[in-house]
Length: 121
Image (cartoon, rainbow, N blue to C red):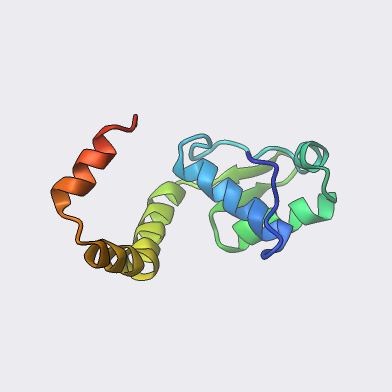
């Protein structure tokens, strides 16, 4: 996880988003435990209550479950739900602006594909 914080968004929200990214990227699999609140707080030098608030939001959204005495774990089906939500968000919020830029610059599909072919995936 990146240790830089964005001043435009609360830290707990950024921590939540980083866990979501870890699930989407496959770093955290369904059934895996989340890193402990204490470890995350120490690693990022944030208050443990901030980490707990981020984790609680994930529980409230049902992406994560608390297991008494064991910690918090990624729920089954979470990655599929997140992929669906993130794809929808991309198509409704980000894609229209990207499409507008493509049209404004007069780029063709071949231009886009050839520029992406030079990068490693």
